[in-house]
Image (cartoon, rainbow, N blue to C red):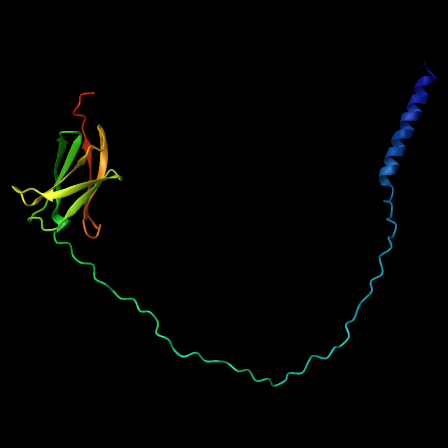
Length: 172
């Protein structure tokens, strides 16, 4: 066993010295690579065409009348709905419903109501109360809120709008 120790020690020493020396060695120099030959192409001078005098005939169009916007005033509604307000609504026989709008002055124009985006209710002033507009039509539902708009009959212009909750009169 005693002869093996010096041999192993000598072998480890040689390996360590070799490792240290290989780390101190100069780096390998790269081998030069051949670069491709660059051929430079020089363009030859080609003369440009010389400008020539050429006459061009241009036709001038006569002036035409251009359309002008004509402002057509929108007729003022017969009734002033700026002070109008929802008055009442309710159920009628045969699954019908009404909405009443009140204005400060007696109603002069003709109107209809567009209800729940799909129903047209004709509207008329009440003979006893000429400043109230009553619009009646098929019941648009129960236990729900519906939108409505009052429109002029001739122009379809909206003059008043709102929403109303329809109660359930049937007790379901």
